[in-house]
Image (tube, rainbow over all chains, first blue to last red; front, side, top):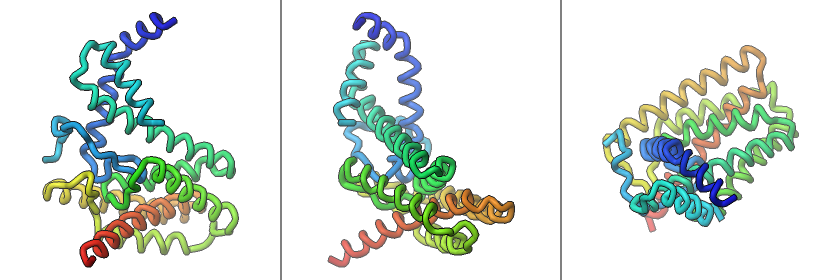
Length: 53
Length: 193
């Protein structure tokens, strides 16, 4: 069961990472990062996703 | 809870791709995805409970479209954010359900006022996400364009007799302007102190 789940994650990994990159690009290139009322402080450098410098 | 789930999801993804370097980045991204998904689910559930599903979604989308670029108030924790969002959504739906605003110009007038508030103060940056001068210019232009389009859609929906949808857009504009104004006032008061 766990092996099967890991296999699924392994297969979907490229799609998941692309999706997360898209989400971060939208997030970084807007005034209000969060979709509602909370703005988590990024502990990582997000400059690579910035389109507007 | 979302924080723990994000950490687990990021851990699973990193072990699948055999790369731990981007763990923090993926954790952050999963946090955004999961918290947004939670809010969307709440919007849908509240909409179904009040029998105003389309109105609830239209309100949420109108609010988010402006909010993304106009900025404004942010809660200190995700839990506070969740409950404030829940209260705002619930209150808007109660007003739409109980009060017979459907043929009233009140929401249209508040949408016009909201447009001018956004025109004057946007974007309102957050301490956790400072903006460069170029970003401010771009986001200001985008938020004004989106607000103008939404204001026109309020008028058009009313003209075509779709009052509840028009009111949903109007409520979305009003809420976005209110949270932007709230943050602006908070900053002004903070500066005075």
